[in-house]
Image (cartoon, rainbow, N blue to C red; front, top):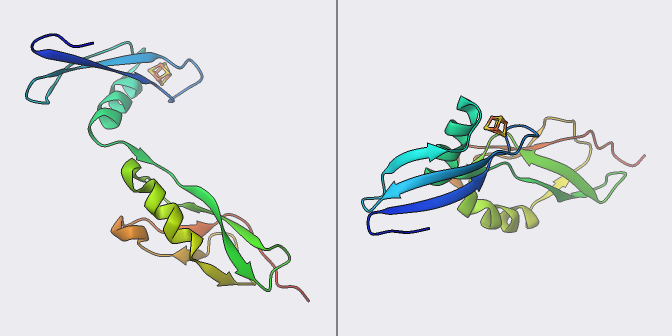
Length: 128
Ligand code: SF4
């Protein structure tokens, strides 16, 4: 919704199963005027973060050689900017690691310069 000075953006809080519907009013300078709809402070923080700097964890798989399975499940050890998620997945599509791998091993450090590492989320023994 938009009037002359204020634009309202809608978000769905994912902080808990209640799923509060959040609204953020922004003035014509891009500053947040008001946040509505949250049932707790966590929702206010989420709305502000999602509105100004949305971030996501990346969970996917990478290729692995010599393991008992052909793909290794991995995830980032923190959230990266949402607009870099697609590029991150493309970067990870080019990664191939060698078994054995232990859960928590770093597969790729400083993903796209975000400061986040990509880590293995399970052990992957080598084929005997
Ligand atoms: S605002 Fe609070 S109560 Fe509502 S969904 Fe988010 S975390 Fe849950």
